[in-house]
Image (spheres, rainbow, N blue to C red):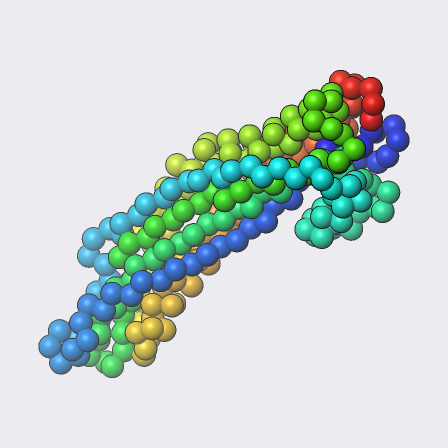
Length: 238
């Protein structure tokens, strides 16, 4: 939440950090190329086992920082140049994470190559943690402290709510990606497995960006001059 609109310009009050973690488990169908090697890549004969699990994170509170500290934290992560006179009074950082745990089956081929395709995919998506900073000049129990805290809690509510609203569609989109994913054929079993993982990650990234965009838009609706003015009007000692 930014400072009083009549005294300082408004500033952003939220940061989103995005991490995609990938884990790969390889199951070799057979290491004997003479006994069961296939003439061509058969691919999966059954649908990929898919689970998508959201998680919503805990809130960490940081109340001992100055307004200058909050500005430095914001500027370090915001990825944009803001005028030096913009100072936040409160700041929320959301750590967004998606973990892809892929089980890949390897099938030897008669051509001395290997075919790889996913057998199962476990997706965990959400927020490990949220961090709220509040300018230390505003003490617990004051009107100003509570007004800032309520605003930052609204941001966290939006992050969690948007994930709940879109998790089913996210699941459907990944299932569609898996149905359309072609097997990888390459000379090394490890390279084949890594190629499957890379293709999956590449196709899932746009889904993550889409969810980020939707959530950012919902958060932006409460980061307006009108909303900040309404918050300012709640208290007198800014």
